[in-house]
Image (cartoon, rainbow, N blue to C red):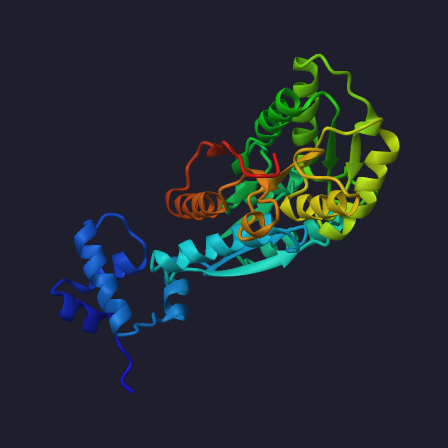
Length: 343
């Protein structure tokens, strides 16, 4: 089978080879209609660029590294999936995506980042719920390799964050006003050891809960909070029992560790012979479909727009690689309270 070349694409499209090269490389200098026409032909002819020549000419690795504590929750997996989808949908053949996990350990995170940097293994690095140390940030900045942080913000990097505090505040305030002051909270945990990666959403979500209590003249007590550190529904029974044991009656439970945990809590409440939301109202976090819609009752939740987060992250990576902006780019996405049956 004859290899399809840039010249073949150019002849079919009636444009120059340079125009085809710019479009395939993701340039926005070519008009939208021409870009669409060329990319249709690229897909039709199944054109595969000569990656070795391209990377050598551009001085790039052709890789975007994505690093997370673990890919075991809906947020991590959904954002990575949307990032890949956006990359594919744009017709960008410039980069492949390489995913890494730190297993929640600081030393593994820093070792991975050093290996990527000194091995020139990536043109940009996306860190999900991770915070690099200042030395590493300066190292990458000095060589013009962009770091994009999701759920963190550090000077010298670019960032995309969900306003976790605002989302939890809105949900907690709603529960208090609708169901009463005996509200409880399920949280993630701070770092469990010196070498463990801290969870940046822990403080923000707990802060939103405390602020809602304060604004509704409710005193915060540690007994109001139970923990599900791995964001897993199998942790729900122990958390529910802890909240029951430590609180004199419960009006509502706000599960800031996700809809999987909220689903587990709802099942435990039903095993107790109680109704949701008449006896205890429940709100989750993420809007993890189809779980939130197939649960009985359907789960009221704080929606994170995974599509928007992943898409914004991909666009930010491309802009950082191509334009080398001098100023940090920072995007904050507002979550949405989705009212369904569980509250």
